[in-house]
Image (cartoon, rainbow, N blue to C red; front, side, top):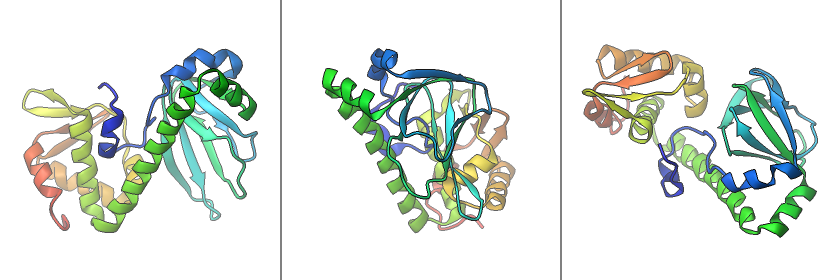
Length: 230
């Protein structure tokens, strides 16, 4: 599905956000590295750089002081990961969830790029703005909606933004585990499992490897207005 910046408020998955395609023209100024699936791309304490994904996908995670890990967002082709500023107690790290090629830009290299093409500054700002909008929306969702309904809203949003009509149903072709749904929504894994089980029992959705099938979109939409499922 073609990306549309003006639809950022409808985003349900923190994936890539605004793709900065024009940065491809300046890859020769940065440092390009290749990573196998599962490799560490950045670790806490690494040199501060802007990370630009040329192919594949990486995942940014945060580790708490207690050692608990949490998905922050995914970054795919033409996505940028803004790790340009040093912060105290920064326990973020990124891993390749697919075989990927990544370009690293230093602050000095970015200054050179912006002097050559000042529009790229605003392209990167759009990416940061899209991230901010998404996480503000997530905060509001957590404040206003019951955890069970948040899962329903996420699934409905996925269908509207990524659903492909197949016969009388819709398919959302994403590799999305229950653990990832839990981390994205902020809902406990057990609750996610119960909600998915409930929706499958009601024949509203069907979760298969690599895709979610929505059999009854109208009923799924109705459930987004409920106070809770159970």
